[in-house]
Amino acid sequence: MNASEKPRQGWHRNGGMWLLAFVVVMLPLLLTSDFHYRVLAVVWIFSLAVVGLNILMGHTGVVSLGHGGFIGIGAYSVAVGPGLLGIPVWLSLVGGVLLGGLLALLIGKPILRLKGHYLAAATLGFGILVFMMFSNEVRWSGGPDGMTVSRLDLFGWQVRGSQSWYWIGGGVLLAGAWLARNLERSPTGRALQAIHGSEIAAATAGVDVASYKLVAFVVSALYATAAGAMLALMNGHVTPGIGDFLVSLQLLTMVVLGGMGSLLGAVVGAALLLILPQFLTVVHDYEHAFLGVILIVCMVFLRAGIVPTLQARFRKSE
Image 1 (cartoon, helix red, strand yellow):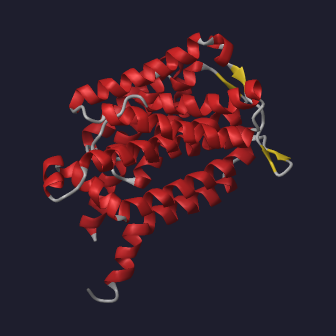
Image 2 (cartoon, one colour):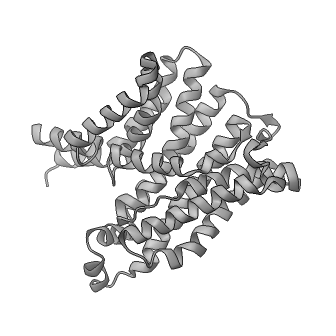
């Protein structure tokens, strides 16, 4: 390898991170209202959950239809903790994330023994169970009406406003993406990729398949729970719908649309699915039809996902 090839390979490895950081920092120059800041804050927060789910799906091939449940757990943790238990908001956030990881550890051991659609159905069952609990336990969750969420207080500064959450969401996303990138390049990441290629081959090579899949499941749950807590804190209110099946399906679609295994693809998939409907409001009653057609076209012509397909074409042109 000559010296000129090393910077180029370094750019291919780290270009996505640099590009994401550039976009987060420079986008405010183009924003003209709090509504724009709010939409992008939601994009950053959902992107964090998608980055976590991409660790599970993109690197191990495990499909989860229940990650909306972890988002709901994070959201309700910052509502129940301060509102009913008197726990400070920041401590409720940390405790909610740890609770999400603990639940993932407990349910992951039996669930991850399943294969294929049985595994997907089991994760779906978990998500539905969490949604039903939030909907029916009126005393703890407020039932269908939901709960008010206290504002986050950081060193005497009460976080409120779309612009504040834009920067908090963007900063946490960059930190989460950096951790995911380092995990991908670690021995654990290589073991996960080996499992994605073939569980039998990975086991033959000495990889503890069950343990590594559990690690990926727990890590992805931590990301989703943190995203749910941030979303609830930004909105100031939470309802059971934040953790229903449609949210899980939305996360899954974001991963596949952007490109499984692609860190930048996770963000692109989340951005496309959240921002595109804002432009389609001009067609009113046909908004969902247009969105469906656009998603179908993307999946037909960009089968590996948007980012991996474009990267492959770019490299061919070099």
